[in-house]
Length: 433
Ligand code: ATP
Ligand code: MG
Image (cartoon, rainbow, N blue to C red; front, top):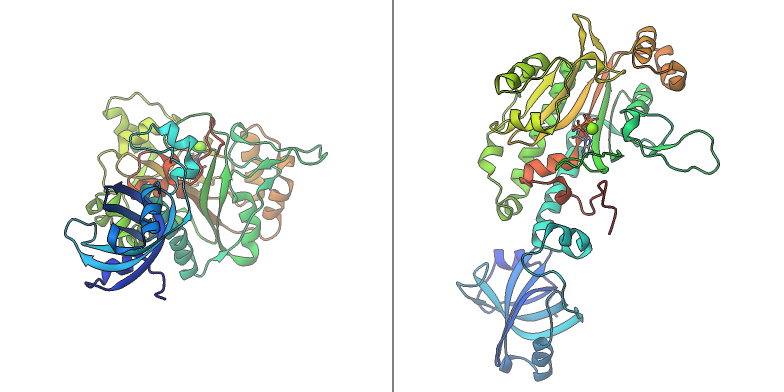
């Protein structure tokens, strides 16, 4: 018997009369008395199948007549040229088999966002979701390739953590047996990465991060995926090169590996193709001036939220860095030795209105200064006991960053909302299915 074939392989090398055998799902079906048109979908694409009453056993034709979309099927037949069929060839079916019959599929055309989210378990098989998830898969793989190519080690950090890295307000607390200490889900691997760095020097991870984000923006999830890196001896400027190197690598790889998906998603790849190194760099102070020139009235210390970042990046075609943020940005950032109002850190903003995809910087590595910084944030150094040990035993300058993978996927595929680039999105109001 002929082997099962991927639909894209069949269509990339077709010939009249060639015998083919595919398994997949009924994507569309249209029936008349003597004729049934079905479009079969599998992971690799879609192909039209045509069933003539006289071309296959009667009971198989009758079965096909009662088969609904999304049933899983096996079809065998011969290829025939047809200009109107997607891909230019169709299968003239000689054998039709139902593997799992579908009930009436609840998702029809023109459904609301909420309905599709409620039925996410079924919507995931749509061609749109599949295209996005294929790009997402490339991005995960290429993050690894990029760092492995530079001799970084992949390491894992705990999801259960005992302290805050990114501020208490977005911590998810979890019950942990009868522990009296508080236990939280990870917001970032950073503090743990700084410990793991002493043995391996150059490390990265890909893992989930959890933040109780109360803001409902198009770019915040409560559970999202980050690629994080930490490296001994590197300063902020070198970390920025590692950041723009990664982002350029990801964009180039997706253009090369997912042309069909980008086309299906109607992504304008001319913009992606123009992206070049180095990305422009602006200081926070310059950014304030730029935004104020556009009519905002921001003062020193103002947070750059989604509105501001959208204004900044809407017309851009290349990512930009923002550096030298106010020292209130975080206790672990190293204060700029040349200007103590600011810290040596960076955010990378994606163009076309997307905004921040990376946050990173140089860490304060000297014990006394780090303790002062912790107090500056009204915290007690005792809360960071093991973290401070890292400054006691052979500390070195070091830096790192975190790339929000979901935001990066959203930008590269040109998807408006972050929830549409992850299989099962989690937001303040949604934790099902
Ligand atoms: P924002 O100000 O947009 O909330 P942040 O400054 O809190 O971001 P970082 O702490 O620097 O973000 O985290 C590193 C990266 O992780 C961000 O640049 C972003 O790409 C991603 N990220 C952060 N929070 C979220 C979230 N809630 N959902 C999805 N991605 C996120
Ligand atoms: Mg945040």
